[in-house]
Length: 498
Image (cartoon, rainbow, N blue to C red; front, side):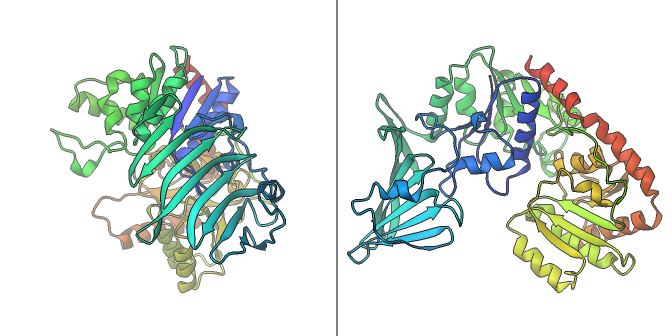
């Protein structure tokens, strides 16, 4: 069995989670049984709704907190009718607005707030109990009550002091006792005094052997507990981001990225590291030799793959002068630079349009920027979409990111024959952009101003639409993409876990 460890997941998942979904598909393709372990709490949503949405199968998921119960990963199917059967007065009236309902008790200050899985169904995710104006409990459901949280008033606020996790028959599996930032886990036969200890207990409980493989995608808070308890299993670390700080590195010392520092210190206990590009692998190898005096086993395996090369409908073709970008709407993706660049280029390329796909915290700020630029007629925020059959409808992909360890959207773009404009930064952009042949790499360094970044984007997109041999650029994009076809990536994983 292959166990893949991560922390969290959400509606606007990062590239790490999407990389794991691609990996899950690879493992299915080579008949390698795999589980994906998530160790964060998910009080606002059932974890299954997150994992299913981006492509995991329920049986592939392990959640740390239900691992010790007999609840399986499943969608919410517990209903309002099921909940009413637990009430002393089942017919208590409820007022509902969208996903939230409220039942008010006979005494003032007593009420229940019910949170439904969506706005239309009666599938119930959680219920909050308020007594005399104080929150005292929250119950969480999937196909039964999975766990409850217990609160007491402290300094005028609701203080969480206990979580109780249940089996499907209602018995208590274990408890999490909470005191501010300190936690303790009480099982029938033992006490664990930290979350790290809980992770270690879970790993020991897996009964790993030399035929198993443990892959860690995020080590923060869990890496040591995993490595100390995985026994003879083969261990691997996936490097998803730049692994060091260039500005704090000289001939004598290197500052590793703190996300990977622990794993790098443990290289004698790691069987393999995975980078997504040859450029990063080569740099890591040379740096380990220079600064550590030994080189670990580092393999290049793309974090994603392409099931096939996708081409536009021959009758419709690509929309002329159309630009697309896709990412989380986060500050580090610099979608605002892309909007500024397109607004600046509009006078020279009047037919140009830009569609922005993705969701995230910067949505409202980007709406405001588009409005300020008077660009709402040609720049659209498209929201979160399955991009499988979207890229091939466009003429150009534009990337504003200054840090792409790989860039799943870049891979998907070249897989649809899209030329790309982006910055010459490690490691994804130079992997997928062959400057002057399928797009343009914009030189930047630490001293490059924001305005210079924007001007670089504007200049290259204008150059593309005015001077580039677009069919030749598209053909070279497809040639680059051929190395990322699924069967080729599957073979790389097969050779690592054999």
